[in-house]
Length: 37
Image (cartoon, rainbow, N blue to C red; front, side):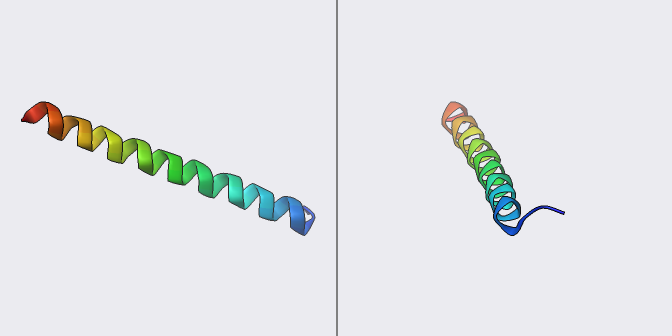
């Protein structure tokens, strides 16, 4: 079992990864929209 600090750090990393993936997807959509014009 992970110490609580390590567990929190791991969750934070996972959330950052998720946010980064979401941002990347949004940028991709915006880029497609710009190219479609």
